[in-house]
Length: 150
Image 1 (cartoon, one colour):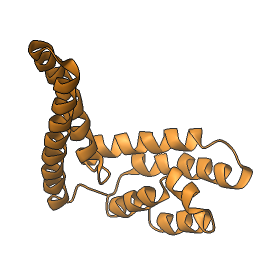
Image 2 (spheres, one colour):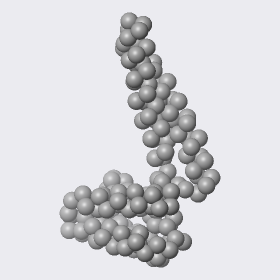
Image 3 (cartoon, one colour):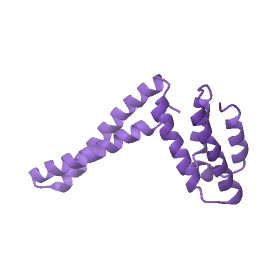
């Protein structure tokens, strides 16, 4: 399905700056391609054709990477829906964000009850983020053991 596609992307991105490589998430793209190589799915393979074209336009013609990023995001969502594969670090980020939101909500309530919203919110956000990061790390470890991370 995607045999040799990773090599094509490596050749296309050879010589670009590290900053540009990070902004285009080339490493993540290569890991995703490697993860998908054993899968046989024509639809997902067909999504990589416009991705490569948009990447080439971005690198060679200096076009905006907007369409490349949209296509890459669409591929990631489809891969997650179909196979359950997610980028490394994304599960922890989701749980940390959830912990922050819950900490803010609980901290506002507790802070109001105690008469000092700033202290309540500050403490609860820190606790919520720490708790969310811890839960996220455990969930991510479980996903890694199942082979669902790229």
